[in-house]
Image (cartoon, rainbow, N blue to C red; front, side, top):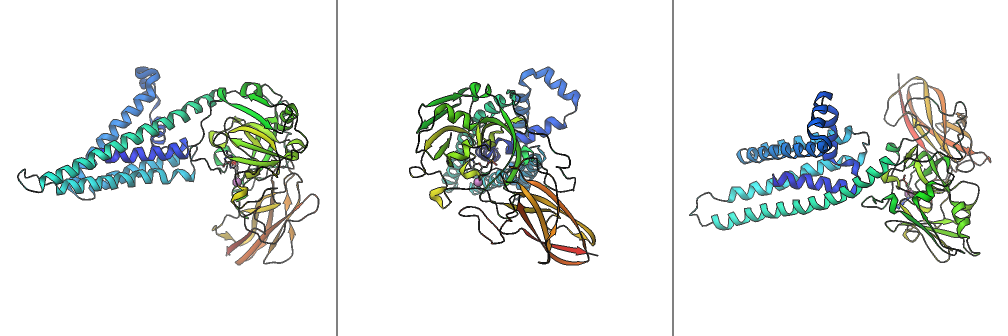
Length: 498
Ligand SMILES: Nc1nc2c(c(=O)[nH]1)N[C@H]1C(S)=C(S)[C@@H](COP(=O)(O)O)O[C@H]1N2
Ligand SMILES: [Mo]
């Protein structure tokens, strides 16, 4: 039981640090809730009332303890028999976390780590127990017995301590998740423009025009997701300003909100990569806040800071011009998910996230590029980070076999703030062929495109190229992600079978 407790605690600790949505205990509990027939659910609520969740967790703890005891006894009797029981735990945990609505790849290692830790601890304990001779008179009995009891006590103490930490992390995140779920966002005074007809193509496997929150890429340096109570949240505007301004959440929500579709991207996104997503953001224009503070002459940069100290340096004009940079509170019709910056983040169309998209925002400092730097700049990344025009082939998916005949290609292309004018494909470095380009929903978002090409059996190299609405094509020149974003054509190999 000590071994399994240590494993479970380690998993919960990892989940507390990574994201509440990867907790194996929560996932298994959720799966139990989903699987239980409605009549049993009603019975449980009738008996336990508001304590139904606590009762479920208590029941799970009891079941886990019994199975852990069984694993221990089996391992004592027969080598690997107990490990197999624990491995089953791991598989159940893995199935549960992958079955959750929020399933992400980052959830996979957590139950595996749990099971591996439990097996290692059990191995250590059973090994010590075997050397503990049961004959009371034998000379080795004393020290061996002491070694076993020390290991057992040590394992129990570490598990208990980890459990307390995991519970604290979980409590903070759960409390804020609860507040978030009760939050009602205001309607936008300026809603997102409706989609033009045909903006969303129906090609299978094409990235959706608007990325669901659960599929949205996540990049940050936060080891623990900051848990911020919106009632206690406060934004300070400091530095080169006529008046310092403080803004609380209720005041922010009462401002006239705008809603816009904006595609944000990470500077670490490789050509063809998936560190990019498009969402409908709800927020208040940053320029309104800056106007309240009155930037002093000489200020040319805004250093935004998050709760955990991370910073981004954004050119002042990107926050004051017409591009609708905003203090975002909503993402696709919901309050920001905790992982995406709840309660407030910055969204600046046209700039990579590292110089603009501060999550868990707490301070905005007016300053000068000559005086301040954002987090990533001294670490080998450029001071300025406009998103580069690029395009991606989503269909056919890598590794999919394709039948000869008419082969459907499709993908996305972006040139934030300018918009996409055309997308072309070429096969085996032949002539560029224009794809059908769906009308954009905004110049600050990606556009979908598709093209059907007749292909006979064989191997092909297919490349995509986007041109913006000013007529500037994306560059063929390959560049790595550092210091200011990758370039080159997304190139895929397609195997066409008869
Ligand atoms: N507080 C904080 N905000 C941050 C970061 C961070 O590390 N900490 N990373 C930035 C980077 S590099 C990117 S690409 C975007 C990613 O936003 P997302 O995780 O919501 O997709 O957040 C930005 N905001
Ligand atoms: Mo990023």
